[in-house]
Image (cartoon, rainbow, N blue to C red):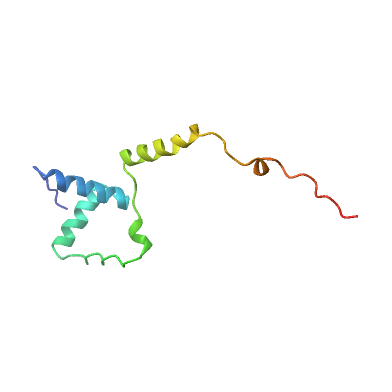
Length: 98
C-alpha cells in the first residue's frame, strides 16, 4: 500500500475531519481514507438523515461544551433545599380503622 503526505491543509478542513473522527470514534487516518474513497466514487455515499430520526443526534460534546454543562449543573448545588416538609419526612405507620 502507498503512503501519502498531505501539507497545507486548510484549518476548516482539518477541524471538520477531526470532528468526524470524534463523532464516529474512528482514527483520523480511517476518516481520511473513507473521505478519499467516497470522493473517488469507490464507496457509496452515506444516505441523508431521515427527518425525525434520532440517530442524527449521535455525537459527542467537545471539551468546552462539557465544561459549560458541568458548570451549569454545579450551579444547582448552591441552591437551598426547598423540598416541601411533607415530602422530606419518612412515611409513618398507616392508621388502622376501628
